[in-house]
Image (cartoon, rainbow, N blue to C red; front, side):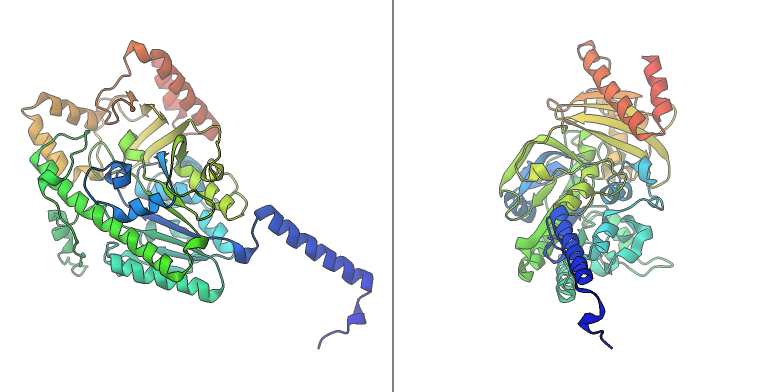
Length: 490
């Protein structure tokens, strides 16, 4: 039964109305958006794609990534963007928390600590319809209740079928519209992660196993001959290396088709103009001297942002350095939500608006433990020109092991090393490292010459050591004692 209007005194009703109006104005004033006006967020990621494998970032293979290139021309591409940790699950934990790995608990293939807030939950709690395509166990795996829609990789052609990405993207966008909510869709391509398209590894994984039926990998629309693909400067030009690169680039092209499929679903929904799109790779290619390391090609990522009427189309930022820890702060500020408690990153929204932002002259990158749970602590400080690396595990005895050694390339290098001293030295360095490394990436991005003992760089190296020391002290890095011991030896 409704109460008559005379139940409450007029002055009481007036005060309630004033308070409600003030709260509404504060809400809109603080965020810039009423809940129903917030932009959608589409986060597209690819797995293990080097930045320079993308056409617009300098890949020489014609039309290798037409969809990613088109996205870049409609938004802003960042020349100096790096993920914080070049391993798939912990880098996604950084994206979701805005924290360095040791500050979230996700050092490797570990869950985010209880009590650490995430981007996913903040968007969900703010009224976003949340959906994820593939990589489900690698994105806040213990917070599954915050996803409204989950599509696993097996329902997406092992995370590699463009048509299935198109269909499921369209379904999630439509479901959000039907619910009257803005959407947050994280679409994760599992290309060009191993097994590469057409490789012996793919054929092996496609076979049925004792407790698993045969896996049906989708085909590819484009293959490459050995003379059509580049060999990265950090690898020797050997026949098996070229063979693996042909398979890798077939996977790169299919990843681009997945990006195009997701964007087509967005365009056809009629919501592209009200959607913030971010695209990036989780780290570099799964070959030696890239993924699971702190070298330049390990962490550099092809980060692109499109946001109609906010981000100028065809813009190319070359002056700012952005990092994986900045993803969550930027998305939250863009949609008008407060930052997560305890974030280490900060929003680069001013840069997206064409403004200059101070304090973006360097980034810090990490490695802690691999998927095999082997501990290989590394830290790096990168500027636009130089990079310093501390390898806390390098003692001359410990041997490095990661997934990137499982393909054709490392085996070919080990064979060639028997007769080629230069390749033998590269293999030795990859496997055992040295406690410190320093590179001039602007002159030699492939990190072929370690300048750590070059007197001409001594003062600069000390500056980088000091930056890393300050970072480790400020964040309570558990590798701080080991780094102090290293500094005491210098």
